[in-house]
Image (cartoon, rainbow, N blue to C red; front, side):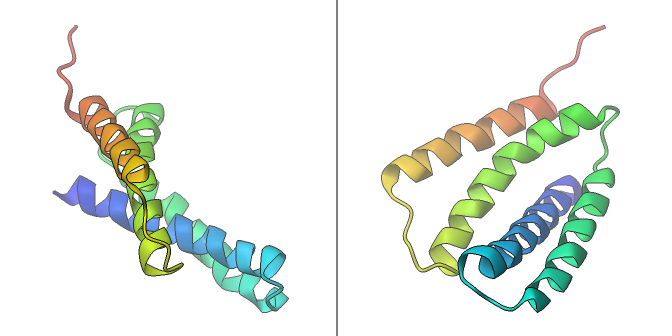
Amino acid sequence: MATFAIYVGAALTEIAGCFAFWAWLRLDRSPLWLAPSIASLMLFAYLLTRIDSEFAGRAYAAYGGIYIAASLLWLWIVEAQRPDRWDVMGAAVCVLGAAIILWGPRGA
């Protein structure tokens, strides 16, 4: 459960950090939006190092599925654009893939 919470925190901080940069560049917001963007992305990187995994690549690969699902929630909640069935189906496949990467049996 702690791993899932860290992944969710990492996803929220990455999306928020990237969105703040997006707001500055694409939505013509103040350059002051860059300060929380950088802080949020630094927290994101820190959180990913807290994942209990022997290998960084495996932790990052599993994170991808969580990131995709969280991005669609961001789309719905923050940007007021409801994901369609293809978004939901694609995210479900990705989350299943992340679960397989995280909890699949590892042989010798």
